[in-house]
Length: 138
Image (cartoon, rainbow, N blue to C red; front, side, top):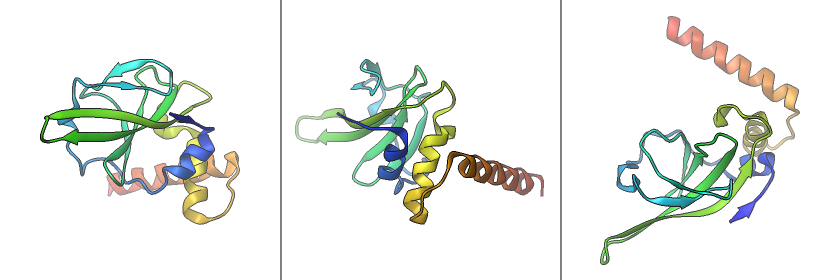
């Protein structure tokens, strides 16, 4: 598995889309290697950050500090399913992975083509949260 800093990880996973399009239940119970160095069992309650092309997705470590890109493989002839770790990162603080400021800065950089400071990223995220609150209230 390739390890990288959170900002680079965000850049490389920027093409992801929010979850909800793919059924992950077929992978429940499978073991996978995590960026934290441990093996975890894929559970229904795991936080999936985003879905990537080619049956890949970003999952948050159950222990909360790492993000891992997993590639789902399935051999129909042998009915073999596996989750292969491709790359990962470690966040700086224990917090919900999606809110990792370094990760979000990398996503914004990949989408806009310019460098984002951590302060700018935090301000942008706050504005997005305010917009979501306003939409929910209307």
